[in-house]
Image 1 (cartoon, rainbow, N blue to C red):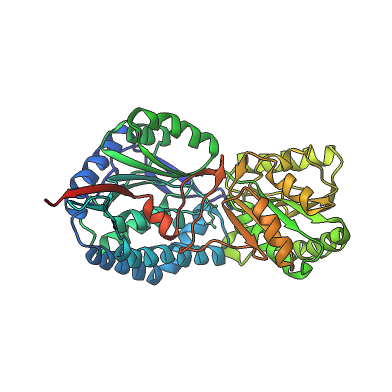
Image 2: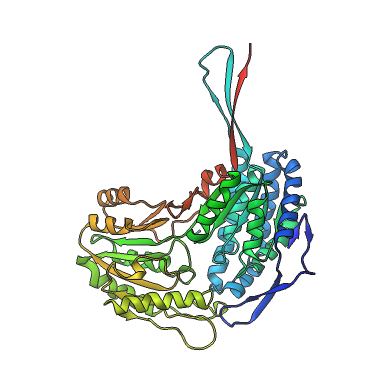
Length: 469
Ligand code: SIN
């Protein structure tokens, strides 16, 4: 852990971190709790006094240095990421570049936090809107993007003038530890960025209770998000929540089928299906259904599964629990009448590997069409009309990402207007970008990360009415 610029926690009980491809221990982390969380909050609170007074230009300089160091260390960071959570090395390298893009973008955006002057209704007043950093921020990050979710949260927070405490997931915390070495080299003042590892309930519980933490930014399950909403009520703590998804992927009959196949491959199998924006339900219009299934399955059969270090397309699932969920969704679908086009089995041997799977003859009664699967399984349901596709897509409490493939501007526009999703990829299976708002409607979250909305999340608005006579 790093608290107030010092490495701490080696004297605490240590927790093992496992490689899901080999079941081997790849490292250990301190099992921190309430005490360490509160120490980190104290450090961040002290550091806030000075950091919040630095100029945007100074903060941008630190962030630019950090950006350069992340890219210089991309191979090391990517390797750690693959070893601790399994994603293929080429994806880990992509994630490092993606992570750095947030740091660069917010280094630039720091200089564009503008206030406002409002025309006054009377001659003796001047009305202004000022922006202020919200204060100490706790960033609680998930295992599936061990670096990008850290930078997507902390880069705008730091740029806005906030100080932070990072709490990484216990499944993939070592990337965060390596990242803190780069933070140190970048020269950030002590206490501006702190890292606490260990028990989520104790650390997050302490941060929720501590009045000095003004904002929580969390990526994870909707279930935990709801708990945080309840806990935040006591102090009206600011929250940004990026929660579960259950993305529909709609292919209309005038789509370019090859483009749609590439799009769904990119969306569905990124990180082995373990992203919040992965296509989870695929709806294909009847005229092209058979052709789409055939072309898509042919590509899926070529995907290589294995240890992320071995040049594969798909790594292991994060743990046994994740694998069991995937297997249970497939079993339920098959029992209810789905046909397996390819895959459908756990890969025997060490590690939590599951075959990339395509299911056809899907209907809405199947659990896979109701819950997020978080694995390499693609269920494809036939739909008749654009309206049916939109209704099915919206028939969920989630509203994070959706995908639409059609070559028609009119059909695409009308369909997307009906979709209650925060992100839509139109003929695009990978819409995420540092400069664009990422986040969900409905139970998929509150607030946005990325883009100028991502900066707003760490700023308070202060209206100042100035009497001039
Ligand atoms: C996520 O799964 O939450 C992140 C995916 C992305 O940033 O594209």
